[in-house]
Amino acid sequence: MSQTEHIPGKTTPADRPVIEIRNLHKAYGQLEVIKGVSLSAPRGHVISLIGSSGSGKSTLLRCCNLLEDSQQGDILFEGEAVQWRGTGLARVPGDRAQVTRLRTNLSMVFQQFNLWSHLTILQNVTEAPIHVLRRDPAQVEARARELLAKVGIGDKADAWPAQLSGGQQQRAAIARALCMEPKALLLDEPTSALDPELQQEVVRVIKDLAAEHRTMLLVTHDMRLAADVSDHVIFLHRGRIEEEGPPAQLFGALDMGQGRGGGILQRPPLRTVHVSVAAGINHDGLPAQHQIEVEPFVRRRPPELFLWHGLRLFIVLWRKNGVQGALSP
Image (spheres, rainbow, N blue to C red):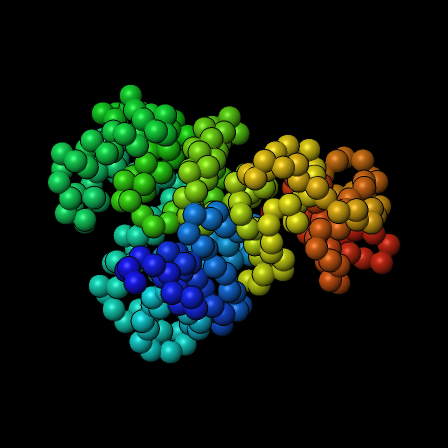
């Protein structure tokens, strides 16, 4: 039997998820922010994490990359479990070499770009592969220039970060992450710090990467982006998974056009309800009229209802006679 032949009942590295989390708990002191979350990111899949601010999305992503310590549960990279020492709030990774290996294979793209201001864009992209991975500088530079061209800023290689727009800086940050040749990309709200017109520059790059079947964990408030690029969407609320599934199941057809798979996303029929938006209530993003029609998203769990209006998710706090408040993510 050849070494590449698959043995029934036995997993190979290609079969294992790049990232797997099992029953993860994370707390800051007495405040638990991740409450028993489990997820899996198979090779070549895009997993999007959505939910309101404070739901635990970014914290979960940082736990994946060991930028945050967790107090319970398992984190596995290609089937290899992170080794821990200590328990509870004293639990920390127990193998520094393993941490380094994991972080170099899980490149992170942050909200605020985090480019080094004293280095050119090219130097920002080449710094870690040369000094951390110890790769040949000439080969790294050639690869970096390819990646900068790939994200549409090949002509900015010798510019300083301050000379670039926010969208260009974020694309440089994505090129920097790709130059590490990671097994997966972790993107933490990569468009949230950008103006709407600049967001689309970054969205196009992310869609191109998804089309290449790169493994990605994406935290986003952009529901259209999540619908377009994801294989699986996880809706977090107060540190727990409320709902998860393929985007067609979670989003439905709301004039979103073609999904990643090429088919029109279809929303199953749901009961339409009328809610009153009282004067003075925070209803950012909802229509100004006093009566609106919404469709329940997940389920009613008093005193809350999760709902969609267009492509925006809202959490509505209910009173007996109508809506107390609608909170935008």
